[in-house]
Image (cartoon, rainbow, N blue to C red; front, top):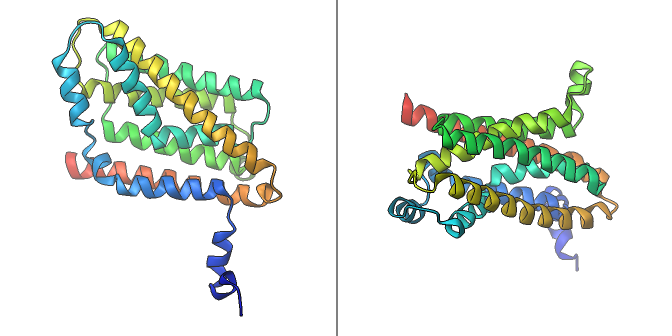
Length: 248
């Protein structure tokens, strides 16, 4: 009797042989679609918002928790981070690029909240989606083939980090937090963001380390980046649709 795989159509058999990283992309893509209504509404968790609005003064642990929670559940930030380290093998290079990203988003997050400078939530998240598209195209070597130039990847990581920080600032401004203890609470939130980023990075590196040791890494790297690019375009489309629905 034929085995289970032989009974399936050829595309299905190929899909079942995809590496874990591609399935991770598809899972994130599915989560993004399931959370589309929340993304379009663009509201923060009501329980968190109510709690933050009721407290004042220095509350470090709650803000550390909120920062870590946002980063760990922020699939757009995680996708960009995944793309940044996709072809980085040395810990020194990974540390450099992750630090540039952290400097960028920390700067605009803190300054944006402190000076009450926000960008329309839908538009800034559309730009963040574009950062995912950019990184996927960069990994695919598209800019070199299309334009004959290679963008400075370090500068791009820092610049897109600034946009990601404005996205974080926009979320924090929605909490309408008290000005009492604002700076310490902002710093605590940023610490939480960095802790969440480190946890996400650890998971990604473990998965990538396993995948890179397989024979199919080079063969499936292209597919993985195309999947990431598609996910980025979906995020852009969701946010632009939300902008049209709620602001036009």
